Amino acid sequence: MTHVHEDEVLARIAQGLIYTESEAACLNSERRTEQIFDYNHTPPREAARLRSLLVGILGSVGERTVLLPPFHAAFGSNVHIGDDFFGNVNLTFVDDVDIRIGSVVSRDIPPMTVALGTPCRVVREITDEDLTTRLAGR
Image 1: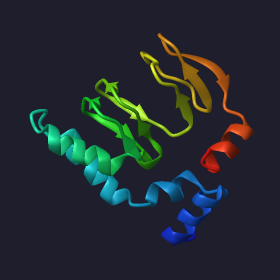
Image 2 (image 1 turned 30 degrees about the vertical axis):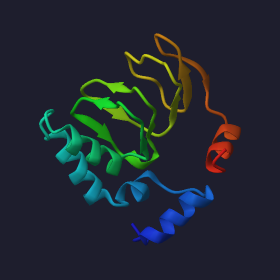
Image 3 (image 1 turned 90 degrees about the horizontal axis):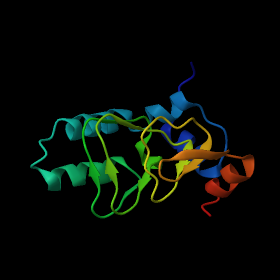
Image 4 (image 1 turned 60 degrees about the vertical axis):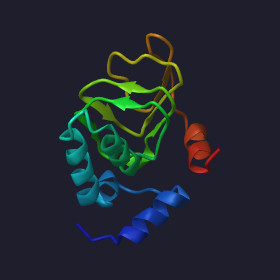
């Protein structure tokens, strides 16, 4: 495997160009892995530390977020959590599913889908147009 410089991968991601999951996973992987490990081993009474770690791991974190450890994320910087979020133990975040506000997720959601409702259900697959819009930041 050819070594790819981190800046090169970040530039491709920002431009919406193709990159491999293994290239993306290597970006800050050691730091992120340590942060997730720290989060998953921090006592619940240390709420301020848990929030600080979560803010460093994920793309954005809303107010009154509760995420019970352990949780798992391969590329957490693409995960955005809104206000009043509750995540139960063993939650795994992936960045290829769009789950809408107010949804109650109680089972796995397939990749490349849009899901919503209570209980959360898949309403459609993610299209190429969705991906283009997401990459453009709209």
